[in-house]
Length: 58
Image 1 (cartoon, one colour):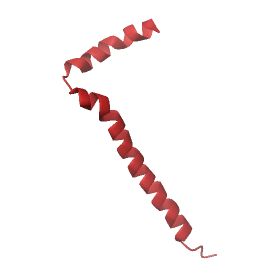
Image 2 (cartoon, helix red, strand yellow):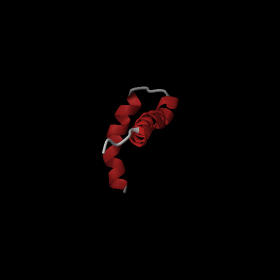
Image 3 (cartoon, one colour):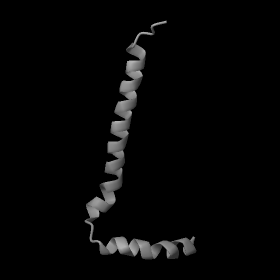
Image 4 (tube, one colour):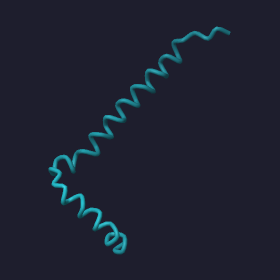
């Protein structure tokens, strides 16, 4: 596992140089994934509801 850390350290160092604020680094991904879950969940919920409500012509 140490070899993997050594492999990723130069990439992580490049991101540290960018100077992104700590709250954005810490909460950015969970916030964006929450938005994705909300939007996709809403779409699937509405699609499922429409599938129940629409009457079958047969």
